[in-house]
Length: 24
Image 1 (cartoon, rainbow, N blue to C red):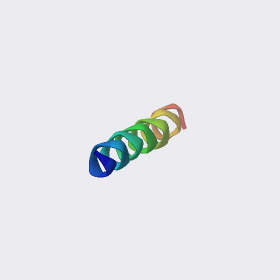
Image 2: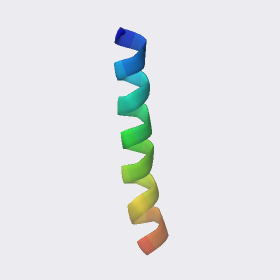
Image 3: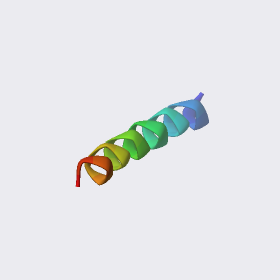
Image 4: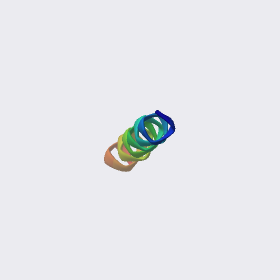
């Protein structure tokens, strides 16, 4: 279950990073 949470966190981080990158 821990790996699942980590994967979700990574996806969230990626999305956050992708958002500003596109606007910039």
